[in-house]
Structure formats: C-alpha cells, structure tokens
Length: 258
Ligand SMILES: [Zn+2]
Ligand SMILES: [Zn+2]
Ligand SMILES: [Zn+2]
Image (tube, rainbow, N blue to C red; front, side, top):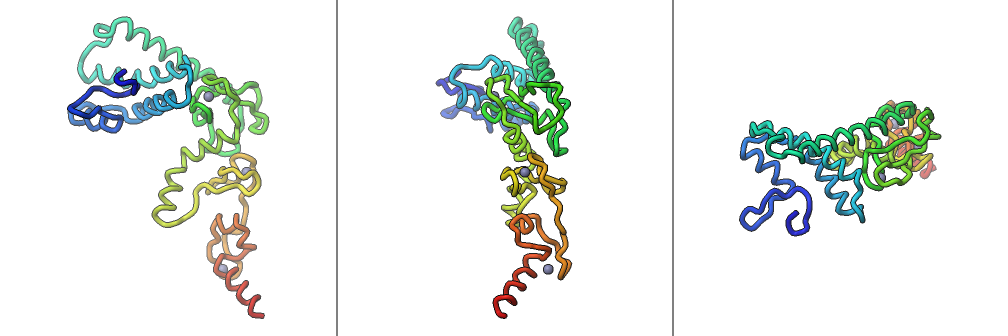
C-alpha cells in the first residue's frame, strides 16, 4: 500500500493520488460501471480498520474481501478477462474467504430471527456493532423472542452490543438523511424524535410507539379549539394539552391579561 495510506488508492496520477471520490469518476470516464454501494461499504471498512483496530481483526479483513469481491468480479467481467487465469490462487482464496464470511453472517443473523422487534423498521439486517460497525452481530440466546431480554454480541470485536444503541443507530441510518433535509429546507422536525421516557432518538413518525422502550405515541393530532394539526414535537414538548401551539399561546396571553 502506497505511503502507508492504505486502502483504495489505485495509482499516482501527476501530483495527486486518486482518492475514494475520484475512483467512481475515473471509472465512468473509462466507461466502466462500478457498484457505488459496494465501494462505499469497502471504504467504510477501510476507515474503520484505520481508526478502530490496534491489531487487524481477521473477521474485519474477511468482511473487506467479501465486500470487495463482487466489485473485482464485475471489473474482470467488463474487461472480458478471466480472473482465475490472471489471479490464480489469490482468486480462489478470495472466493473461499467470501463464502466463509457469508456463512458467518448467515449464522449470526439466524440467531436474531426470533426477536420480535417493536418497530417494523428494525430487522436482523440493520443491526450493527456500535463499536466496530461490524454486521456480524449475534444473539447470545438464539431462542429468545423478546426485544427486552435480547443480549447481543459482536463477533468481530467481541464486545456486547447494547440493543438500544443498535436500534438508535439503525433508525438514524435509515431516516437520518430525511431528518437532515427537513431541518435544512424547512426547519421542520422529524421524522425521528427523542422519546420522553427512555431519552433515545427512537420515536419514529408514523409508528405507534418508541422503537426502543415501547412508549406509545398516542396523542390527539387535532387542536380541540381550532382543529389545526398538532405536531409531534409540540406534543413531546408538552405544549399542547389538546391545543395547537397558536391556541396555547393565545390562552396563555388571555390568562396573563386577566
Ligand atoms: Zn464490534
Ligand atoms: Zn422510548
Ligand atoms: Zn388551535
């Protein structure tokens, strides 16, 4: 790896090294299509390996090879070259590594299958380790069905995975971009809210309750005085008591003037 930078740097061009962003553009210039999702996943693993691992974990390396494999295979296909002829044993090792990793992943996810998650946006595929971001997370007691009693462990770094952390992270990953856009474009809240009971950002608009603790999100969405909609944030702020923010403001004013 050049200059100890590690990871996805293809070649030195002029004075500058091609960075992750440029790989995609460069490939496009050559008329080669690259799987951007797979590349992104690879880059994440690369960064995690740089920042989180003191000694390289065998599982993390297997994950990197496994994610990289389809990208490499696709490049060979597009170049109409035979990877077995060009890479020989290295190709066979990569293939075996990918199969081993996929098997490990299937086994780990199978242990999560029985858990009845409170939120429909949570499933085995979105559970990750908060420490090392590995998706190889298993349930210690695979027969357990309750989210409250689930004990999760990361097979890559060996740490216990906090269920609330994993849920919060999964919701942020799935809906964080929308929350950002809403706030940026219209100073609007949502769709993720902080639960008043457990304090986690696990209340999701459109769901019946908190994905973490189950606190119900049931409130009157219409102001009883004017019929205007009451926002979830106003409800959570305790503003409403059945009134919209305008009416509760007016009521306060009237009370003050009395
Ligand atoms: Zn981990
Ligand atoms: Zn909660
Ligand atoms: Zn009102």
